[in-house]
Image (cartoon, rainbow, N blue to C red; front, side):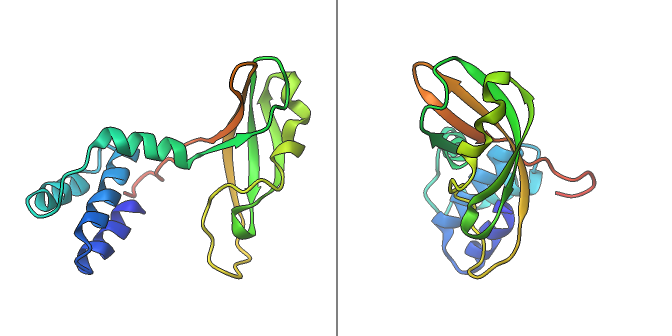
Length: 152
């Protein structure tokens, strides 16, 4: 998606935004050779960007900070249903620490940051890991989406 949006920005002559999205796309999937070529073509025109920043940005985009749920160190996988406004409407414990089995309620009604069109009734199921630490509190991290075989 980042590659396609980068191409739109490139068509609109918004070269720094295009380069930014190409870097995010390439960080998500380093095997995208066409995206690498687009970056090389833009590098002569737009200001180059560091890929390390792209990794940090992608990690931040898929992480939700939560209040402390438990005082023990624990982690568990959950499936969540994202709805209007990117809100987590439902969650389902999949596997992991029994200390977090009932933590799904803490996930529900949290904003995920996922963008949906205004007035959309679309729903999206995503998988992620809820991790809690006695030092840093809890956070939920969406697993990266994996490409469907045969597509870019």
